[in-house]
Length: 85
Picture 1 (cartoon, rainbow, N blue to C red):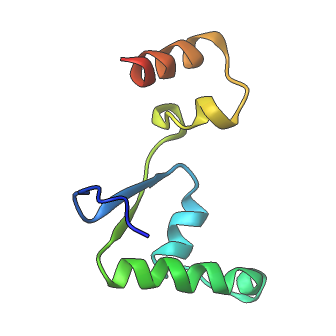
Picture 2 (picture 1 turned 180 degrees about the horizontal axis):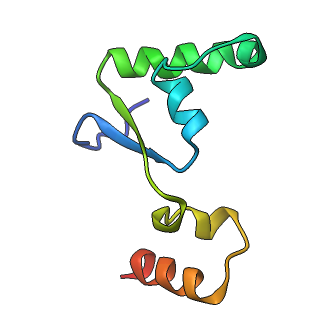
């Protein structure tokens, strides 16, 4: 079901985990990542269709950290200003 939203493609998926970026971009694979194959194939399929682009960003600039981690006051304030404005 579509909501009828117009989105600029490819959507940018910004991640602060280099291992996750490497897996999504097919730069790394091995026996220890076998359990993640289904998700990787889905991500790779989205990438091949040019619907998403996975990009690494430093953790300090990852605004989503505010929603998933305990941050110190300065990091929390910086992310809050970006999200609220």
